[in-house]
Length: 159
Image (cartoon, rainbow, N blue to C red; front, side):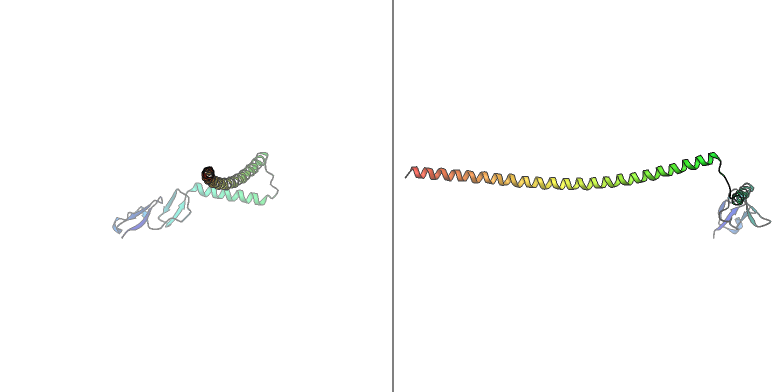
């Protein structure tokens, strides 16, 4: 049977036998969301995050408290310029998205119109084909009529 163990630096391992379990490993998993580097204190039987991360957390909490305490915060000119630039970028992106949607709709409409045009051209070609066929048939009828008129004329001369 395999055992899941962790080094004191937080690296996971699988150990196949309880006899292979060395002293610098623990079966206690690190807490989720811990920031590396982490280490395990065997005396306390507890995982610890790096000191640098804890300092950052305390600094962020202090900064947040300062902002909450000072409701009359006035941004400096560079913060104002950055905020305006971000607003302009957002507006530009929104306009771009809107333009892309309109362009896609126009492309769709053009495709539909092109399809109708092709269908119309096919219908027109079929009509022209039918007209050509009827015209050919009309010529055949006219030739037969001419032959009959010639026969009639020849018969009248022979009388």
